[in-house]
Length: 392
Image 1 (spheres, rainbow, N blue to C red):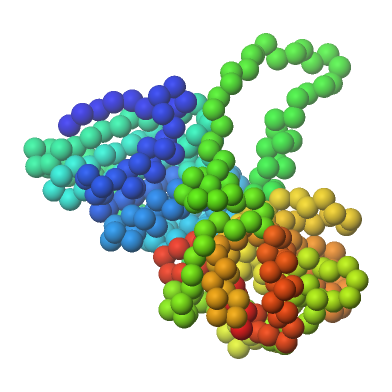
Image 2 (image 1 turned 90 degrees about the vertical axis):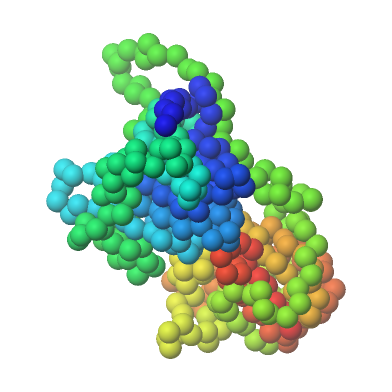
């Protein structure tokens, strides 16, 4: 057994260690526990590809998260839930008992186990930019079998929580927590943090005596996508020339719009809309017509990172990847924008959410898809992206 200390940002970012161990081939860690008091969407998105990679190899992955003091976002929980791994939320309903551990355990049966116990949360700060400290304990098997068994047993209340204070993470549970106000949005968290960190400018308040230390920022999420592809990923550009054959790799059909109008496919007279309106289109989920003002923003794309869209009136925007199949031909994977304007909710018949065609617009126009059927599928099983667009 060997023990060392991981100091962030002095040594290495915990986020990079987690990604490295999830993707390790020698040894292959077949059991993983990620235990954190708090989580945000960016941090989950950064490690999601590595989690799915490990899951595809057959790893048993467990994510245990708390949501006390409004520090875990709804978007983070939705992203965790979309990974399809064993996930549990822990919370003591009695005030003053915050769930606060941070434990990351990677076990390769019969070979090795690595355990990190420290201060790093599943947030961008916790994994990359905060000042954090953790102990790293490495067990080599079979020589450390007895010591590891004792160590694991001591941590088990947090690795495998039971009782009424732990609940399996589901979309229904997230919905309840959002309605109760127990988990804020990323936007609300940023707003509260901004208030806390805003410099005091009142008369008589002395200037802070503390200086500034430059710390490396987390890797850009867009750059992470670029590194795994052969082409640029700016909004509306093709990422990789995938060819789709049949629907065997499609995820769940999320929405369908028949008899596409000219305005959705860039063929109307005058100024084109630039996108496809995501309306009700008589689409039902669980036997009931969807509410188009919330379905796309909260249910279909709610796990994405949404930011302010500076229009009049203001709206929101998010970006993700779409694998595109038009009239039976694969056109590759595009990075496209989705916009949402809540101001349209009060106007009967108005759309609130739109899928923007970006650099795909000219192709859409040239194919003349008026009257065709648009299908939107979720990402393939065990993937968080790309979504799949099919027009036929």
